[in-house]
Length: 144
Length: 144
DNA sequence: AACACTAATGCAACAAAGTTGCAATGTCGG
DNA sequence: CCGACATTGCAACTTTGTTGCATTAGTGTT
Ligand SMILES: [Mn+2]
Ligand SMILES: [Mn+2]
Ligand SMILES: [Zn+2]
Ligand SMILES: [Zn+2]
Image (cartoon, rainbow over all chains, first blue to last red; front, side, top):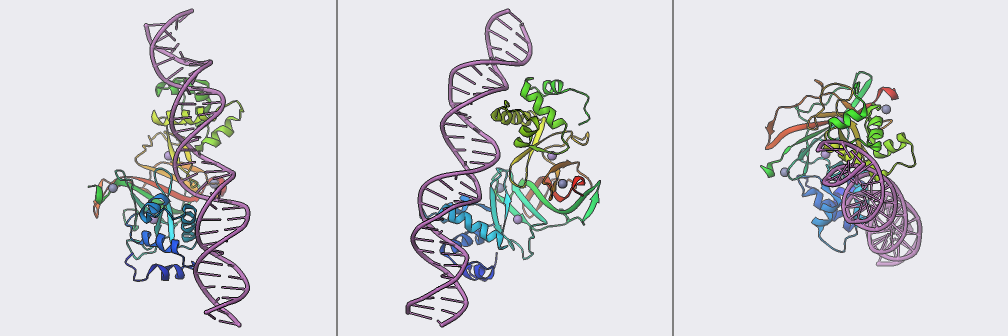
């Protein structure tokens, strides 16, 4: 994220009350280069006292407030990632590219590049197009 | 599909034993312009005697044999569609475009066009790209 | 610092999609 | 028509995520 703000300040900025679980979940997300599942997050926090439902509700609150967004992985579980990750471009939920490693299954949020262009809103055969999600499959730097 | 073959012949061609449930499921898929969920298919067959597990296993068998492919919808349920739908181009699982109507939630398999080009296998910052799924959001002809 | 309002938490129960085990049945080549 | 083997039907199970509700905690105000 390369943000200078601490988790408490970020939560406050996004209209979220500052609680222990939220700080811990946000901390894990800040330090991850890839989108994380609920169980990834539970695993990284690694505290048997953490409540699973609270983490689900935390992730939903983050997403509702626009701090995170979610993307389904190949097993159709939700993964969560901060906006403003790996770039300072706001990654809108409308136009988005995700790189899915076919080896480790990790999903990286990618900036939209010329290779995955945003089309103008336009019509093709009666289909009005307003946005894209580009899901790019391949092998990530960690795996090769 | 615009195929001249009947369901029995198609099943045989794909190495699937011809059974009553498989014929009925395939018939529903042939006559749908959009990808269908398990529950869509159960609803379209509309026979309380049909067994849900058999339909799940039917769809898995179709997909394993390459008769259908599956795509997750926005609720992360699997939708199934024949290959060779809406076009005579084989839609490989590797490179694919799906149009998701934001109004009716239906998903249409789309031929790859110049608007959603297949990239060559190439590297960007250590990411080796081998294929794309283009998920196009908008409004379908039925909804506008 | 204490108050009060409200939101968040923890726990149990629930929901929905899909899978698995197994005995019974059906398909199909010979 | 037979026999080998795949498929079916049923019940039980798994996994991910949600909901209800009583208790606890955060936050702006006094
Ligand atoms: Mn993303
Ligand atoms: Mn498709
Ligand atoms: Zn990888
Ligand atoms: Zn529509």
